[in-house]
Image (tube, rainbow, N blue to C red):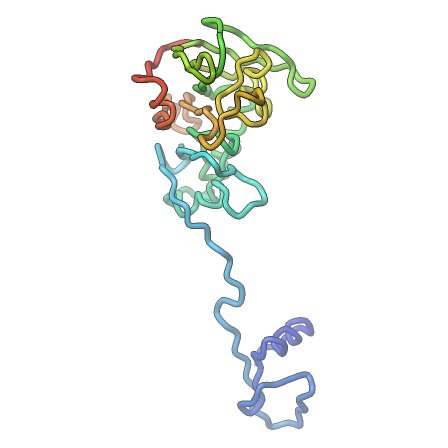
Length: 267
């Protein structure tokens, strides 16, 4: 019988894995010599729960991937149901020598939909993180906002005491009996503060439709989700040097308000 540590022996006895002469052993079992002692440990003594959650993969190679993040799920964190925990089952394992568990390299809010960039090797995760820090990844968002808006604007109010900037362009407006006016707005982040777009748009009295945290109390739409969508990513691939541009189709709730949705260049 393989030698067991004291703690392992206690666990084996407690789990009734040890038998002496075909009888289950306990801490009171006496050993005189000549007995047949056997230990039988189940193959899986502790089976980790596996998250079954299908994701739409928009692009994938051996270095990185881009996925669609649905609303109502965290990118990462202490919860069991997160994008990070669902990545392995949705992606092909990289063939590169430094392949590792796929990892998101930026965040989207729980309620936000859209494109999410993922690293599949240790070197690509480092490179992509550095690209975000150096602002070499262009992220374009679209939102539906409430109220009258200028055609273009820069919002530069500080967030948590830090300089912040969001640029917007008004694409289309429609009248609404409840909200007065709803706007389709194209947005570009110049900085990356937490809840930046939501806070900035609320600060100019144009909160995002469905924002229960930063919206105006009597104008909060419930049960339809947050109308904020991470539409596209543009960057130079850190290993192939090719330009990558990927976009994610608008959620159906956007299409119900604006028919059709017009994509324009520039913010």
